[in-house]
Length: 157
Image (cartoon, rainbow, N blue to C red):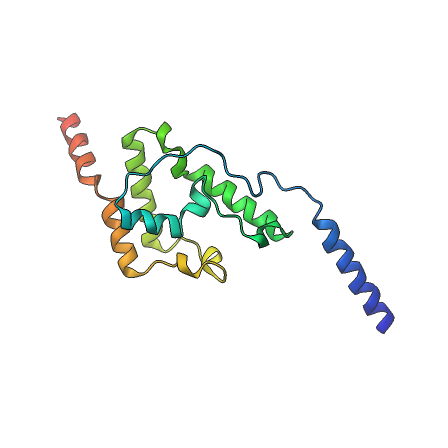
């Protein structure tokens, strides 16, 4: 029985080492494109702390991000996050679309979907949003919502 367990352990170690050689696309790299988000300093600080790792080209890649299979999951989350919303590439987006994105951001934060719990626990506890953080983000996310609604009403007339 001991011999079987030893071989099983050696096999698991060998598989773990072999997994480290599977390449992960874009792991540890950040595209150079940066857009300065026009947000108040306190809102920008919250965005950087809680959102930018997945939704910008300013991802911090911790050491554990290079260990498979976690590296695969992390790279996939960042890739999906950037594809869905990338604050760093907002220079290519018109202001009305940015406002739509911000309102969608608020919907996600209000529902508790963002930032996701799998991101917060256990490595990014500082990303958890307090009620004060949510109020600050709400003010930023919805600051132009009334103006946009007024524009739509004017166009309808």
